[in-house]
Image 1 (cartoon, rainbow, N blue to C red):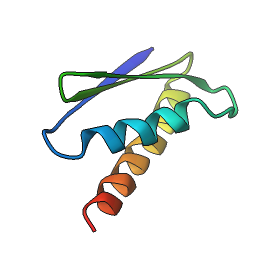
Image 2 (image 1 turned 90 degrees about the vertical axis):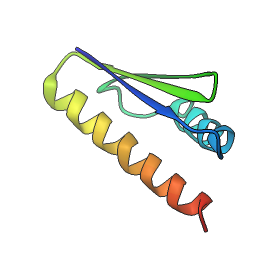
Image 3 (image 1 turned 45 degrees about the vertical axis):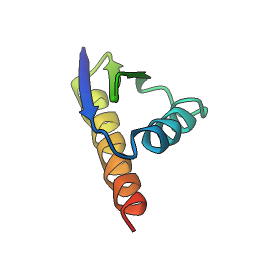
Image 4 (image 1 turned 180 degrees about the horizontal axis):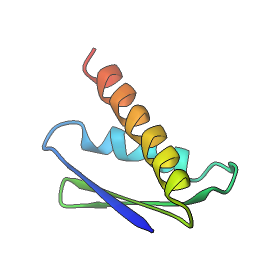
Length: 75
C-alpha cells in the first residue's frame, strides 16, 4: 500500500523539504518506507507500508510533523 502527499508553495518550500529530508534519513522502526522529493516548488512525500495500520500511523506522524514545521516557519 502506498500514499502520496503533494505540497506546493512558492514560499518556504525549501526549509520544509530540508526538514522532511532530515527526518526521512533518520533510522526508525520499520513499519514502512518514506521517500521525499522536491520538484518545481512542490514536495512529493511517498509513504508505503505492508499494512493499513502502518500506513495510517506513518502518514499521521508526517502530517503532524509538516503542520509543526509550517507553524514554526510562520512565526
